[in-house]
Image 1 (tube, rainbow, N blue to C red):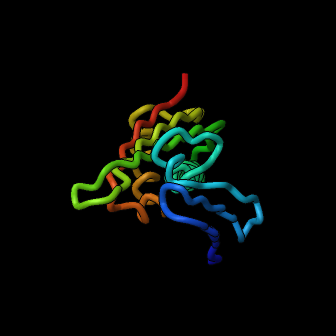
Image 2 (cartoon, rainbow, N blue to C red):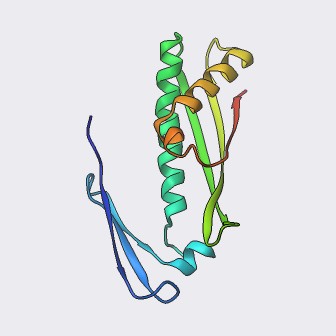
Length: 145
């Protein structure tokens, strides 16, 4: 299986410094980062938390798609959002204090109970969920009308 990489170039101290995250494997772009925008208004910059949210939502969408297929279903659509919260760490500094995932799916022929079971399985077996197991992750999954 492949590995992927990204790099960050940083200049200066924490409060006045700034950096650029480069998605090296895909060459999909470079994104500015700074601590003041991480801890406050994003002002057009990304953050580690936003990048984790992107990784988690895309991984879970892929994993749920495969979980549904293995159970004999194909999603018409899956919409997954992940909200990653940065907060103070009681031990000092900061921590990712939680990840709230909201998932809405359209899947023909699937009832709510079976969907809830499959969504929970997909969330539990998602590689990014596993990587973030030290963080509280909540899942709100529903079938769209």
